[in-house]
Amino acid sequence: MNAIELHNLSKAYSLFKVDQVSLNVKKGYITGLIGPNGAGKSTLIKMMLGMIRPDSGSITILGREMPGDEVDIKQRVGIVSDDCFYYDHLTIRDTKNMIAPFYQKWNEQKFNSYLDQFELSNKMKVQNLSKGMKVKLALAIALSHEAELLIMDEPTSGLDPIFRREMLDLLTDMMQDEKNTILFSTHITTDLDRIADYITFINRGQTVFNEAKEDLFEKYAIVKGDVQLLDSDIRKMFLGLRETSVGFEGLVSNKPEAEMLFGHYAVLEEPSLEDIMYFTTRGGRVDASFAS
Image 1: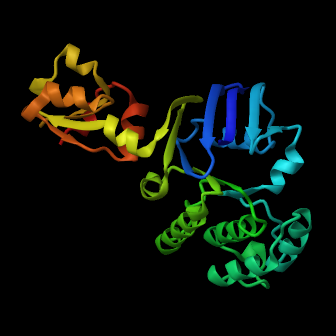
Image 2: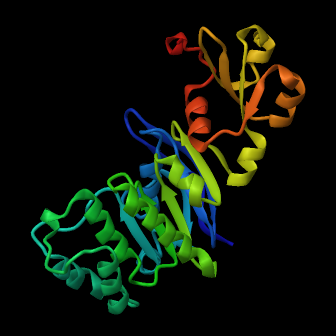
Image 3: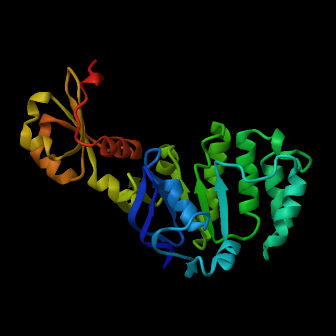
């Protein structure tokens, strides 16, 4: 079963377009949403949450249609964003008192437990919270109304390394009963290297791939070797290629073929998610500025 289903979703602006995006987010797993700045990640999330309306296409969340079932859907969805949507002049207690009545399954004990864990005081005013503390508050609220789906838009960008690690561990613990689902949009791909089950890559408003993370590492490879190995045909097999004065480094999407072609003449390495995003975004261009 899918927690989120997007079908041919489009939204056009004067300088940018989300173009016919179809995407399934599997229930019970963590799906990482990656892509360069301006790729369309936040636009997709805003359409899922009803903050902007698509020009065309359909959105189904937890088996219900957006926007027709928006009220029911939002009872079951938690949201953590890099942006702060709370009133600056309110304390955390006042913020909670304003938000809690909207949720039928609000759990006061769980909320206070998260405040203690995150070292937040009910007396703190939102305007005095650091960026990281605001993310902690958003996470405490999102996890305190028994949400089945957690949608996170760049949640770790303002966090110190210690809390980032604690948050990732917390999210992993959430997934133990296999009833929860997390969509985690981030440019910090090392976070997804640790916890994601599936990866969706968005670039220039279109889906590049939506696959199990382990399958990606079976398919993709970084090839490093002497530039003399490169001819016009071999260059075509690279999704992205970087040449220096001492050799080349490139990304291929057919690891077995590359192993057969290069043999022991080149080094093949497992790419990181950052490698895949970087080389795919740059395309097949050669950039001599990296010469060392």
